[in-house]
Image (tube, rainbow, N blue to C red; front, side, top):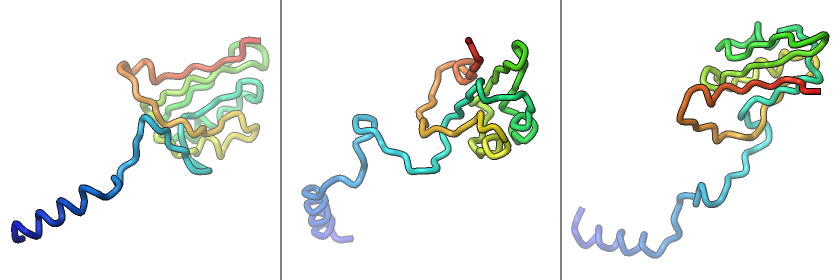
Length: 118
């Protein structure tokens, strides 16, 4: 390229709007069907453990806490966000949220334990 052409391209791009987004200042709205962080509803769970069996990454552990009460331990560091567990849950106790900002400094912070406190 000639120096004159490069200077012309630089001046043209200087007056154009930037192509990038102003993220994290302006939050991005995720589309319908986005597979983000898993959410567990312990009131709907019957303890069939189908989600645990179908998870290809082994990221879900369901355990009994009392009669007809269960807790879920979801390891987001292992989860591949495939939503197989959500599809296999007959009672719809699991759902995918639109939350995607899951960064953590410690691996233990990526383990979510949800249980019924009532």
